[in-house]
Image (tube, rainbow over all chains, first blue to last red; front, top):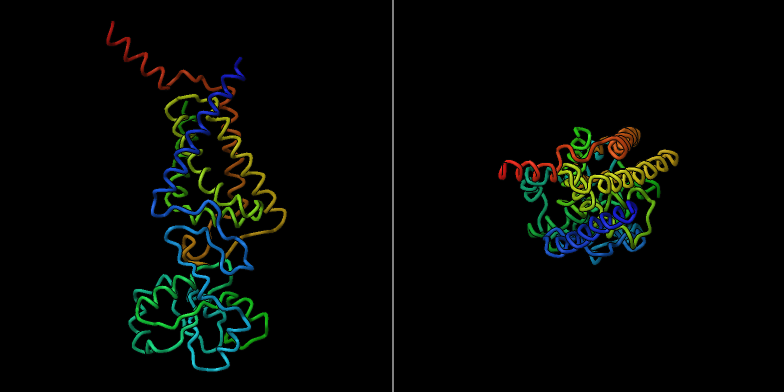
Length: 164
Length: 149
């Protein structure tokens, strides 16, 4: 008898939670897709929210990034924190920590013309800061931005040029 | 009664951030590396509301036994998830700033201990708490008595 009662109550909770959850998620500007993109082989992972910054079209892998690096006509921009940058970064990369963007971008814009090719990166495919930074920069007028998705960790592991 | 309120408040409070930032919570679920990819967003969408409603129900004294049953059920799942990752030596750190503050806080062990304590408190509420005290039914009964008497 009690068991039946508890089951009914549990059903109430679950039903209420499910209905509210999907409704709010549907209407909220921060709502996420019912299925996200969590497969790192497809690029940077994302919950696919409505305000998602991940754009797979901008992504380049380590091979391509290396080619562009060797061409020497681009600027690599590190989206990670200052501490991580100082511990080690891609050689000649510029530090532009995401959370310091507002304070730093003016200096960056003065130094680097918006005709330059920008390659942003952070730690790897589990970090979307690189995408956020690429979006900010393109909003500021940098029309040629790309996101190097394998990040600093893979670059260093590959034995490619770093500065520490 | 106070234990019931404590648990309820903790869960309502915990649910707030997950409801406000579902993408961030989904990433945390991903970070545990325990759930199939297709289920991650569904968990991130539904779980916070389950927390919110059962927390509120505990505070208001509505269906308290079922509410605490759900809460202890979730805590049990969290405890398993945390223990598995503790045993695997698996700490999720994407080094991102869009993921809360730079530098992820609360260690797995701290969370595990906190959840075990709450689980035990939940058992206390389930078996020893007098659900009538400080509940919505009691309040409405009191109001009715005052009105008629």
